[in-house]
Amino acid sequence: MRRRVLVAVVLLAAVLCACDGSAGDADPVPAGTVRVASYDFTENQILAELYAEGLRRAGLDVVVQHGVGTREVLLPALEQGVVDVVVDYLGTVTAFVSPDAGSPERDPERVHALLDRTLAPRGLTALAASAAEDQNGFVVLATTAAERGITRLSDLEQPAPGLTFGGPPECSARPLCLVGLRRVYGLEFGTVISMPSRTATVESLFAGDIDVGLLETTDPHLTDSALLLLEDDRGLQPHENVVPIVRSDVLAEAGDALRTAADEVSAALTTADLVELNQQVALDGATPAEAADRWWEAR
Image (cartoon, rainbow, N blue to C red; front, side):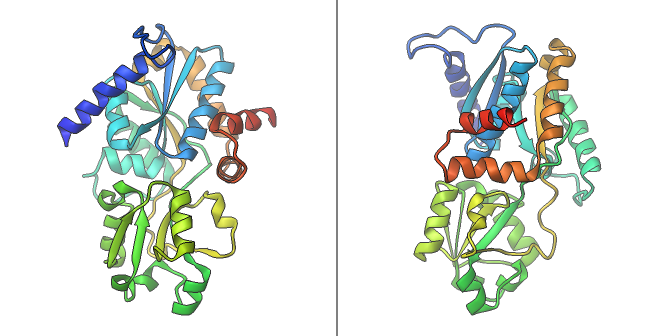
């Protein structure tokens, strides 16, 4: 696993070095440019664009690299100086970087403090967290819920062996996805199918190819009354406030400009904004950059 991550980081470095040039241009990103990278799903790409624009408005030079990969690839890349800023989610990233911390903290301020302490020896800093929050959610068709009497995750324990679950490929190894569903709720699904996107998850639910799917709680598809977000009645999911993580040396070089600009975005962003931004991309056809531009124009 470590070798695969190392190879991925090396390849990522090669891509980022030429991200502003043509395919044959190997010149690195100009010195002093802040490299913002996103995970491989739409909302995170939108967030990367939002924060990148905030940094530009503060006078910083910024490049954005989208869809770099999962947390297993991108956080090592951040730590090794391949990228400079990643926008993450408080509970998930804290569990990722401190898996042996014991019982998870539920208070967001304490979680943030733990995250910052854990990141500091790695040369990383967690900036102020936003009130905007997006948790893992688990969804069924409303008709399925009515037929089986399912409204909570705990209601799935008995029928789970006869159900098909659909989620992202990394879900099977994540403590807040299938691992957590098994540990906290005792859920053992009969079949697990990897979904290439959240849109594919919704389509598979409606087609009857899966019975339960993972969708984030800010997914715009959840405005459809034909879908039901199951209650996390045993509290598997932690608070997932949006939180930018920055290389500490880059933060020092930028003075107050980077921290202040990022903190201002975090302070202005709301959970309702995330739902609206996701809708613009997933349902209205905007690009992440276009959705981010509209958010800034509305301020």
